[in-house]
Length: 383
Image (cartoon, rainbow, N blue to C red; front, top):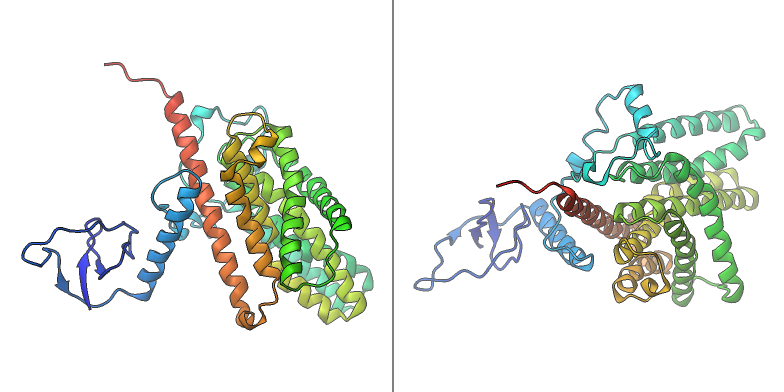
């Protein structure tokens, strides 16, 4: 197969490819001399991993255009999560937990626009996982039924709450305290359940066929959006990263309490094994469920709102509607009876990847927003 070299990184490219599989550079049409290009050379086809990278870069470029940015995102997951395996002191964690107060929130000109490297979320998860393991021993080794409620709650809360801490760490403006985050998680999460149930009382769903899956997707995402919008208006935020965090907090609370309810019902109606299975399944699947769906909605609303007061016009803005359809569609497909795609969790994994492409694109857009704001606030150089 004929291939040419990328002008940016020098790596080989598959003929007719639109993007470089290594760096994501978009190829331009080259002029030819005598029917040949100067860069044409017989080389082997690109590796599968490079092709995956190329697809990822193409996807992020399309999503980037939806949030007003150009090009693909310069992202290496190994860099983003590089701090997870490093050793951190107790003082480092304490410094993080006191951010977001009136005394610790940085000025806008001092906000870092570099990609965050969160790590505290992994420690929170390990603590919750250890707690779950101990409760599991109490319940099933020593047959102590008093530990069952704790087992269900910790199992339901472990992943959504840890994921919420991840979004809190990536909130570069550092203008929302952990107290506000926890308040949104508990009060906002339950309030979104109430809002959802209120809507369901008018539009009940009795079966998760395709129509039912779409209806559930719309109702639950609208129910969460109502509460997300309330906190966005109350906190009067203008940063896209704030919208991500607020949405994640509401979605995490929604997911945690919903999973606890499922665990109770499965344990009560079926068996302890069924309860365990639903807790484990919903735990790892929550990385691509309510938390990230609501985060996308929150980021989209703040992206459209900017630094203006939130009004009803922002909800009818075509840019917001287009982005808000993303979590609705993802949710609807997630609930659809596409059983032939459920083998090895294939459908869910694809939906999780798509959701996180939007999340990382919004993080990128949020950092660029901060970068532009920092440039605006920086003093002009004197000639």
